[in-house]
Each structure stands twice: as C-alpha cells, then as structure tokens.
Image 1 (tube, one colour):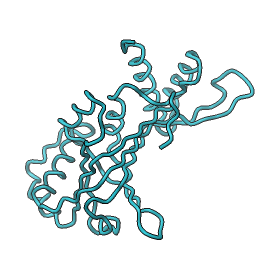
Image 2: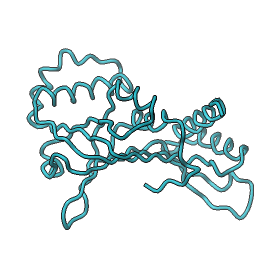
Image 3: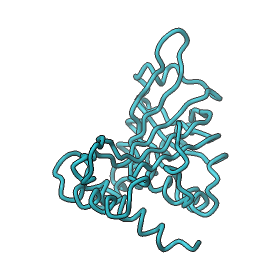
Length: 223
C-alpha cells in the first residue's frame, strides 16, 4: 500500500488498534490467469502477540489467526507457504469542503487501514482448529458482545469443525495508513472531527473518535 509520509504513524499501538477493532479482514491470494481470490474472514491477534507488537512495533514474524468455510473455493486453493494478504479497514468518512471555509477547495475521504502481507500455514489438526475458533469467539465476545460464555457450546463447536478451515498468516510486512487531515490547519482538523461526530452517516462517528484519540496521543507523546 502506498502511504505518504505524513499519513504514517510512529505510535505502534495504532496499527494494532485498527486490527483489533476491525477483525473482519479481507484475505487475498493469487490464482493463475484469473483475478485474485478475496474473502472476508475473522482474524485475531493473540494477547501475548498483541503486547509484543505494541511494545516493539515489529510486525515481521508476527502470527495472525483466522478461519473460513472449507466449502469456499478460496480455501480449497490455499497451500502451505503461499503468499497472501490481509486488509483491515478501520473507520472512514467523507469530508466536505464546506468545512475548510476557503475556496477553491476539494472534497476528500479520511480513512484508516492496515495491510498485512505474509505466508500462510494451514491448520490441519482438529484440536488446533478448535483452538483458533474458540480464541476467536472468546476475543470477539469480550470486545463486542455481552460476555457470553462458550463453555456449554464447545461440543457444538466440535460438530462444526469438519466445515472449518483455520489458518495462520506469518507476517512479513505491514503497512498502516492514517489519513486524518494531517495536512490541514489545527482549526480545520477540529472542524472535521466535530462534523464527523455529529454526522449520522456511515462510520463518521467512529472516525471522529479515532481522530480525537490520535491527535490527543500525538500531543501527549514525548518529543
């Protein structure tokens, strides 16, 4: 992914946050002579790996865990060691030129995204597949659910395993882009945040939260 320098972040917690908060990733892999496969799949970072990423910012060598339906032709095409990519799309929203209070002006689209590239390892062991499914359910329930306990459903999970294909992506490269009006003046950035916070459209409210947290962290970070 092409990332202009002013849209990069030095705070390594930010790419991790986008991955954690937006776990429905787009898995992409090539197929000969045809457009690439692309499937939406849940992907998680295990807690110990997350702590290491936030501390070091070193994505190379990290491992992400995901799973998909074995009936998907995409799964049937995958092989161990195959190059693949994951795209995590964070909050995004339209920015109207009316906020700039100047003319001429042009509209834009603020967004956050993380692209991860690496090589796949297919999980063939049934218990290891159950581990990926259980870890995914537990992590997503904790972050987005109502603290439902899976304890009474593990048997049901086992019944589903023949149809589940689990995988690991061993990361070789990670690009993160945070296009959050960095090129604009302070007052304009705050106008964009306020406008997004009030907007009922799309994920503008989430974008406002990310912008607010991003700039607050930038101000508090030691120089």
